[in-house]
Image 1: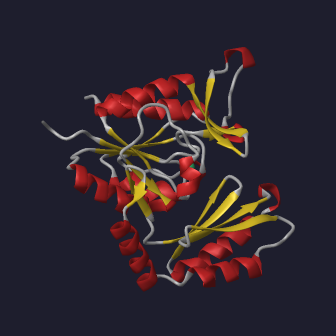
Image 2 (image 1 turned 180 degrees about the vertical axis):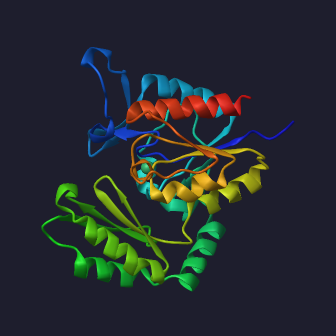
Length: 270
Ligand SMILES: [Mg+2]
């Protein structure tokens, strides 16, 4: 029997959407019905459409579905996707490869060693962020899994130039900068979703890999796949990012998540 295709999908603003990211168009009475898939501090936080929930459940029997996220493990565990639990998941942008919910220690060690060898330490980056971020637009400063840092910002007040300067500072130090909604991420370059996906493909023997994502941190994931999709919104769409293997969808917001699942399913079932 040939191995199932591997489907590696980003979560936030690709498959699941906060109310601020739903971008529901048209009259309210025709809005898609939504299913809440994440509760945070007793309040609903993330949604998929009801049709997306059905498609995802179907996809999980046609493919090895791998949630592939920059979220920390704790943030990921709050997300309760429809269908049976995934055997594999990728958290912390590739820093943690979960197998049946537990982080693969060998993988985590190998990633940490590579980062230590190739990148400026996290402390240097957080010190720089602290020294240059302006309290007028900075809301929170966080590190994730001792691997990378992110800021929560007031997007309207955040100067574009500051992000550019941060990226120029971070690049030679082996770090990448990504702006996603209200968050500015600084992530070590070797910390990639694609490396973790390749490892899972090796373990499952998958010969076809499909992917989807909306942000700069997903670009390597999309490029590493045999076929990929990106929504009509997000950092990649805004940058006009295109690749020969990646279809740029017109759909924006939560319906883009539904369309991505439709494309995954059509391709995986071929
Ligand atoms: Mg995303």
